[in-house]
Length: 260
Image (cartoon, rainbow, N blue to C red):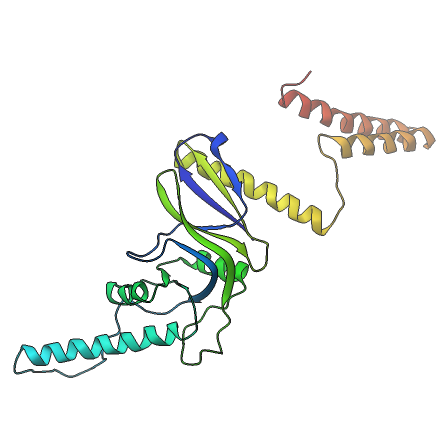
């Protein structure tokens, strides 16, 4: 999997290829910035709030103690969810959705790196390169396939904090970091790189190459010239004219390219 990220600033010459998967997110507060021999749980689950659902009803309390009891019940439910996640024996938790302060604190207390709000592409790609499956329930600790990589660390590129996953399980992860002075320039560079990667992919799948620059037209004109030489009568003149028209295409391409 090839990840392409764009970081404004610097010049195009500052772009580089990194042998790892880089996620444009930051690590939670108070959590480890480096994890070795990572066991990663990739999830898509709400960790922002886990309130007790009461529909079509009102709750009237007699005092602040009752309000505190409701809040504690909400916390207990979230605490149970975090404990179910930690039961998988992980040291990194990556969630597609938000992680609010309370569960983030619980992960920090357990020494687990928590990464929140990894977007759809980031979550899917991370699961792909680490060999994980995206989980949404955590009751059975043996039912979820964890992702693995040798090292996770927080890095800075162009003043932005990012997370690098090195030594991914499938050994097929790399990231192209594009640098440029403006977002417009970065968008153009991304399109050009995407086109080049598509050409490379098709070449690997079907190792046949058709040269450009007017080469097909020139070969066709030679074949038509041979046919014209074997054709009697006025038909040979028409074939020869078509061959000359084909030979004009490479000249037009050269002129448009500014060549002699």
